[in-house]
Amino acid sequence: MRKTLLIGACAFVLGVGTTTYVFQTARAAQPRSETYKMLELFGDVLTRIDAQYVEPVDDKKLIQAGIDGMLTSLDPHSDYLDPESFNNMMDQTRGEYGGLGIEITSEDGVVKIISPMDDSPASKAGLQSGDYITAINGQSVVGLNLNDAVKQMRGKVGETITLSIARENHDPFDVKLTREVIAVKSVKSHREGDYGYLRIASFDEKTGAETEAAVKDLLSKSPKMKGLVLDLRNNPGGLLDQAITVSDVFLNGGEVVSQRGRDPLDPKQVQRYNAKPGGDMLHGLPMVVLINSGSASAAEIVAGALQDRHRAELVGLTSFGKGSVQTLIPLNNGLDGALKLTTARYYTPSGRSIQRTGITPDLEVAKTREEAQVIADHSFQFSEASYRNALNADEGKTRVTPHQPAEEPPVTFDEKTGDFQLTRALDVLKYGGVSSTPKLPTPTPKLASVLERKTPGKPPVVTSKVDPAAAETP
Image: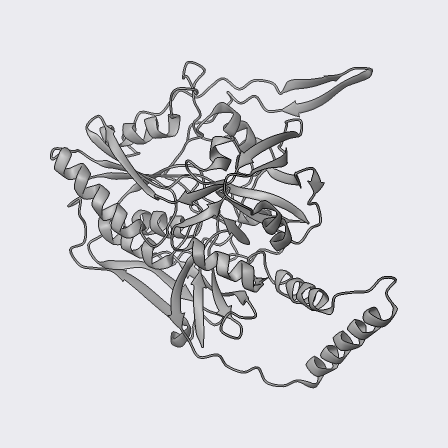
């Protein structure tokens, strides 16, 4: 039986491939009288609906809805893909497809954006991680099956589509996008003074080769390059083998990640992935990896491996916390779609399961003062831990609670033209590490500010907010 291993962050992807291929033998479940009794109940309910519901019903849709409910009750990433959705997912792993360039999931019946892709229609329109899509072309999608919502967003390249967006602390607004054929170039690079900058936006079939080529190009153009910043911010994940290949570019052998099934003590359910000896193309040049809450799954594998192996220090914000593995199981060779089933957790080289908890950076830095406010606001923390039925971390750890980030841009920093997280990453390279990098002065704590939204004929809405300048330096 052919299965496909998934490590992407989302319940459905409109922006990035998330598959690799493995072969396993399926074990038939032991028959149980209680199971057969419940199957009879399911058939009885279906018969009653078919005979007595107020309007004619489509049995196929009812059964698919039952399968959907069964899988989504397990965890946020298990799902049923109908044949069309299955074929779309296979196309996305090849790195070129038509769409909007966003990765989405469903949360309490509402479509939520995990991250927009670089240079996609969604990114150009300013959509952000954590935005809710409430309507498509004026039609509400609240409570709609995620796959059905995806189908509404798909269409002919060149056609426009209007998404209604709800964003924390903003009035609802509409965004008009034009569908494009998105040829994903997941890797970009350039020089930042004496240092190289490498951006990986996702992990598709070309990412490993593109990374190797980009590093070679940087070294050939800058033979005296003093270090590298690897930017994995808002990278939602992708192919496991490509995450290993990218890690291999910077590591000299050793473990990258391990995958452990239901019984982690059973050697047959543990699989380890290693880098090749002598693979470090930078030959030990210092590295800093940029991460944030949109860095998920395959991106977390790379960041965790480089951190645990003491090959790089991490700057930014705690990552998403998607530490589970999904296996894509084609049904009837894909003619009946496929199951996307969570089958394992993955672990960093030191044995950390980062499911729900995410990877903590060595230097916590918010990109903007507004982002620092979001992290401090208990009402808005979007991560794997946001899902009510997310798997727990294997060790029972919990994700960091809302807090003031250690660093945020000072008021003198121009957030429109500068990238504060990148600036601090370059500082870490310049000073030789996080411990020796001068820390920013601790801002003077201020009283909570009052935000007023004035509505004609109504009193202002008063909301207590922690002042975004009140950062704390460890």
